[in-house]
Image (cartoon, rainbow, N blue to C red; front, side, top):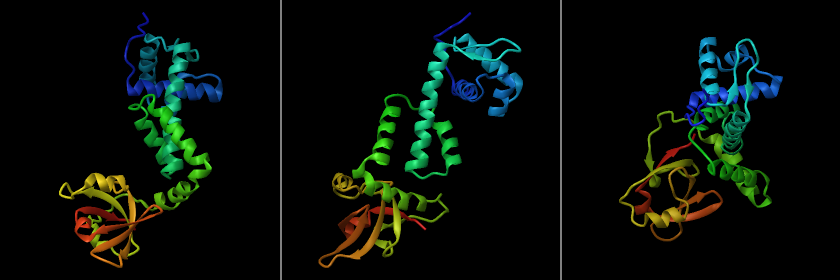
Length: 230
């Protein structure tokens, strides 16, 4: 009996995505092909196919290729679109290694929905194609590969950062007055900045944030914590 209202787990979404990819590559999908692609046992594939068939997403009979139904093909297309958008965002914009980007996309794709996928795709296309994003593309190409996994280097306050050393802003203390003002300037967790020295007048330091130079009071910089990028 087919029950179209049954929920689809993350695991079943992976099976549906794999089946769609195998059919696109080979024009058919056998259980052994699915098992090989996902690295699972044949009994696991059989259980998954039975569950997907019960939801009306595919037609499964022993010793014959698996066929997606119209609703199954539509569902698989949505999953594939999410995966491709995430992989493209991670690899092309964040400059993550392609294999790592693909693996991360597999994990994330189950928890985002429309219109997030559409907005992400629009952002990717804008950054990659618009002429007025040339500066941003150059910034991403230069900065993203420098951000490495945390190797245990501790946080320091911004006023202790050495000249010309890039750093990732990690934390802003609640004791900093005017946090919103700083957020409007782009001084937020995750931002990449560089200390450029002291300003000519007053108790000020100069930092570079993307292509913008900013001046901050030393007293304020003590409440902004960064991790040096090596």
